[in-house]
Length: 304
Image 1 (cartoon, helix red, strand yellow):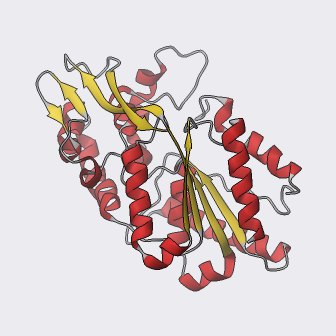
Image 2 (cartoon, one colour):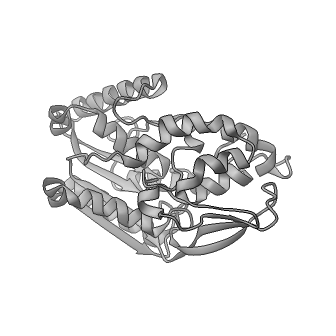
């Protein structure tokens, strides 16, 4: 079983481009895989998994710097990995960031403000896991998906999505204010406690990383904005009302993240937001046009 539905999710294309630009695996280029089942905590929340992961990642950064005559690193993260990279930087002492982090580059990071697609995955099942011989994959793996910490932490936040219905049924609509009720309605009341404990604090927490940061997103793509289950059958594929975004993350969430980053005057001086029309969430690191921009930004950050 793989948690990547298509090859375009992997970093092979980007790694090859970096190699052509002179980066060398294990010398000037390093990977830091993480466990998608778990979600990085906000300060004050315990997480045995991410406490260990962040320690190993800090050691990797320090070792990479030593191998390269004390130079600072560019930290790159895509999608959920973007959120992991951001939370890692936030978790480190400011003196450590100043010493080791040259630039934080986030490509299509999943935002704490949330987005609608995780609701679809939670209610109807996720297509992120791929097994060629299994039919109705989303429903087959839905019970397992719902047990993952990461399945809950990116639900839409009330501050960004307000009271607009996100899930619509004939009997009741659910907005970002009604997500606990939705968990019960879909038959997973066990998710209410971890949602309150892990997801709700994340929605209201923000701390600027206080390092030079670039955030790149795709826009101009049909992106789920509302899920319609007319007869209340949550096993059925919903009718989807679309808005703008990268086909996964809603534009309103991207803009809310930009606004928070720019609210801190010192962070605003070293923050760059890039929107690429037509670039999609899963292929923004492999599509030719978007990949060229990704490479340009990495090389520019390295020269600065």
